[in-house]
Length: 145
Image (cartoon, rainbow, N blue to C red; front, side, top):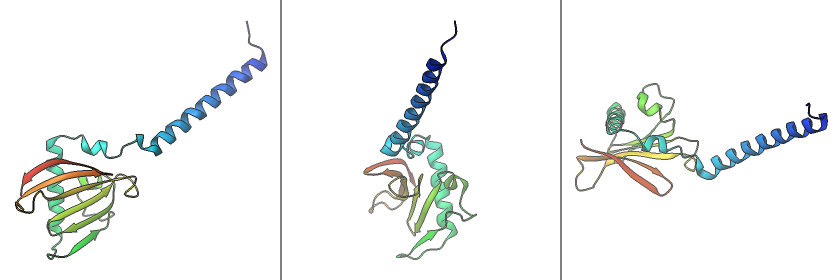
């Protein structure tokens, strides 16, 4: 038995409306923070973080900085280590004892921060790799340097 034409049109329209509403819900959910660009970075292995910290160290070694100086590095710089490029940075700043990376978005609201710096002012040879999104900061890796 074949469905009447009017019922078929209604079924097709209902399917289109449902698909549109589902797409809208997914977009709104993403914009409302259900999508977390930092989660991929925050759930890696200790080996990954060790390699990432070494990439930060190599970035520091490429530039000689004074004690009170900081430098902004172009995110398009070909000398950026691949691991740093892979987090899709949109801003990178270096100081003598610090690497700041804003990544995973196009602004601090949508992205997250990565910092490689001394863990404690008293023990400057122990460095920490941390990720910050909004007010949540997590230390992901600590190493003597």
